[in-house]
Amino acid sequence: MKIGRWLIAGAVVAVVIWKADDIIGTDKQQSAAPPAVTETASAIASPSGSSGDTGTSEATPSAEPSDTATPSTDSPSPSEDADPDGSSTATPESSDKPSDASDEPEGSAGSDSLDALLQLNAPDKTIEVGKNGVATVTNPESMLVLVNKKRELSSTYAPDDLVKPDVEFSFSGDSPKQKMRKTAARALEKLFAGAEKDGITLKAVSGYRSYATQKSIFSRNADLKGEEVANRTSARPGQSEHQTGLAMDVSSASANFELEPKFGDTKEGKWLAAHCAEYGFIIRFLEGEEDVTGYSYEPWHVRYVGKDAAKQIMKQGVTLEAYLEAAANGATKA
Ligand SMILES: [Zn+2]
Image (spheres, rainbow, N blue to C red):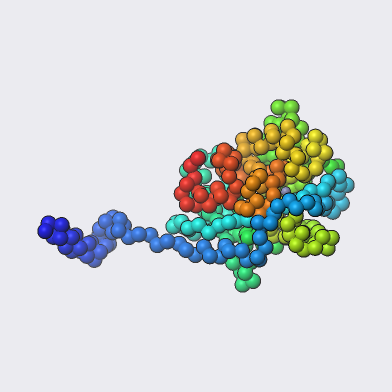
């Protein structure tokens, strides 16, 4: 039968091509499937056993601890430093190894470069599990870094470009928690100015927090309420997005500058959700996504990711976890 002959002929040709692979490179590439990268797919399983699934607001708001030397009018907040929970297993993509996170260009970089960036920052490729079983992110400086209860920042990581954004704060005096990374700080200034134009006054409450500060916050909460409750309502050191310098808690007079879900119902909270993406921010902990992020709804916590990603994320109404995962699997487009 003809097909049989073709098959045999094909096999012969294939062998010839294979033997002559220096000469005929292209044909060979068609049949050679790129090996799947499966490096750390399994590594993402929760190292600490602390599940973000319990992030429900079972009352007990924890007073948001103030940083050193801050005349603080901080109000009680349920889960100040939330962090999400990378529910990630997903199939790894084939492609280059992630290089260490460098800064990404701000704002609109075009969809091609966003796609490249998303590949570089795919959750599976940006994690390293130590001997102690702790999974540490390898791209702490990326605007697309994913930090949560399963993906920690190193205790030694601190951004080197922290600045104080020129915005109104809910308290007076100077504090490290006023700072953000430069790109995020500039974007926050534009966000607040844009709000003001629309007759909306936002105030910044809490931004950067070092590993050491987060550690003392967590210990204090654990002493006061027990470790279990502390784990639900505040982040363990290394697991707070505030350590990236890309997050800011925002509130308004109408919410008494508190970090409470009710902020989401104020006109300021609604404006923030509707417009933050235009400036490169997302509402990081969405209502109803506790199972994914590990934390309950936090309409006050904005996270800088850059304009292109922010617009897609907010338009799709997804978590950063889900977005990065989908992007890694080639489903970026809205
Ligand atoms: Zn926060």
